[in-house]
Length: 115
Image (cartoon, rainbow, N blue to C red; front, side):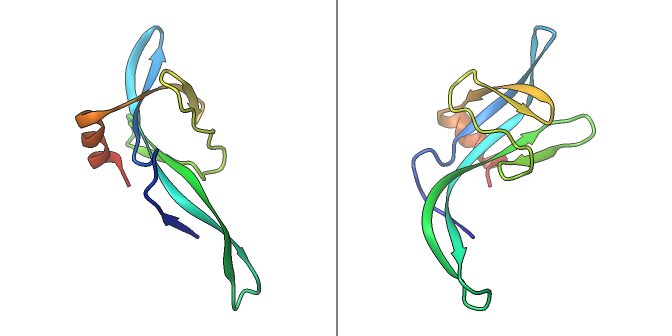
């Protein structure tokens, strides 16, 4: 069970760049949000939610020739999220570079790709 929470680091947006043969091309966007994760304990009929822990979740929206696809942080095989500019992340066998956005550009991208 997750419950969205407002926390610093939530709502960040990054461009994903594919560097193919020395030429960078836009491959998609990555958005983050912070949610509270709860452990569920007890019998199935009366479960309790304990140990709240804030966690950053992310979603990568990949632009593709055969249509767009999304990858979520809790998908099997999803890589850990790097936090630095010009960091690289491997998504579905493709090595992509992250460029974190700020200001109006980030707000516009969040409107389109946020969740």
